Length: 199
Image (cartoon, rainbow, N blue to C red; front, side, top):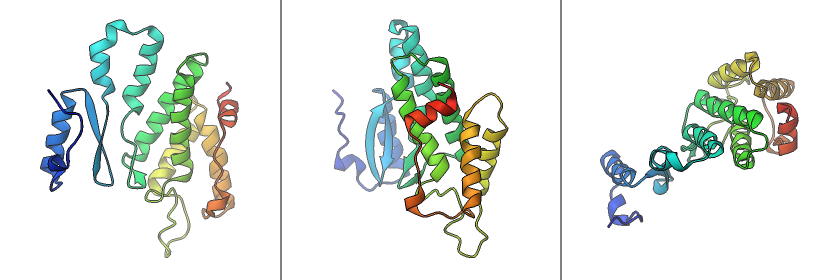
């Protein structure tokens, strides 16, 4: 019988080979291994579960699982993004589409929480993934180049409404010269987000 506790012996001298061995072992049982500060955490593998239980899912649950297949993967590690900015934006847009198409879903709040988290990361960054070049004291203050590309992609996107949030945020960042204090960080409430998305 499989043990679902990752032992200290398994972790051992952590290297790429031991990490791959751990991930392979638990993927067979329907788990993904997420790594945080060098320690593994087991989480359900949504694609594995969908394959096993698809025939028993309602259409509503199926729609939610479609969102999870995109969003339910490790996003951050060690106080920074573990994915590209473009992938973060892709996850945001998948969430937005679910929220606007399924406002009465029992899974609405779950998806709203993910949307809110992804939006917060994109607007304000993380300690090790800032949205501006704040750690480069020699540079003229500006958006990170990759962040700037994703902001522009959203702002030019006529299909989704997240771009309006980002356009307003970018105007604020520009007004601050791309430098702001922690006390100035303002997360959007669920009601603010619903208003922007027309919900």
